[in-house]
Image (cartoon, rainbow, N blue to C red; front, side):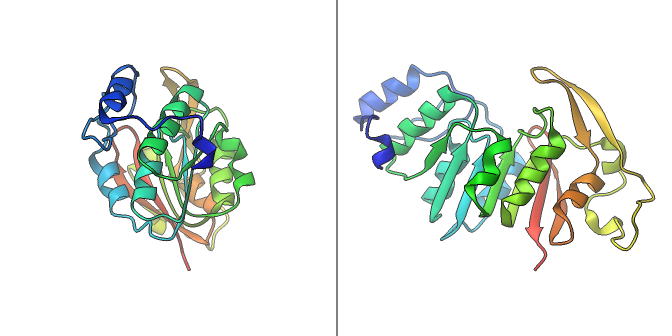
Length: 231
């Protein structure tokens, strides 16, 4: 835990007092039973993520916020976990929790465009990030470049295509142009402004034939996808 030497190990009372002094987005259960006062965005997402076998795996959490899923992956036996986010305050919270929960997770202040430099991962988690960035296609390509196993992505998808296709089985790989076309939608996001919701076809095309893209259902915020190695 040398990366967190500046973060103190707190008593249970101090730990709860610190947690009470913070503003949270995620709900995270701490070692003393205290649960941070964040949003309960679990449902299908939490059910699916908790069912993944993390043992011995290299895991990346893109847009990790205060570290909920990154910390859980390490606690479930992951060999190495890296969480990245652009919000320095959230990363400070994540590092404090990692120190006090004795979980060796690396938290880095970088955006999705920088993850390719981190190498390849067995498991990649990316929740609500791709729906809040301008370069959605670039973000998907960055995820594809660092994935060698399974990814769980929650993002906005173009509904006109989604209503017709739930997974990549409708897309014929032996044709250059889909019958449905390469479509997408523009959506007005509260904080990010105008963002693109790509079609399922675009997601399938970016990850290529090496990966199977499966629609899992509507997550707590956006649509939930599983990207899995086809080999």
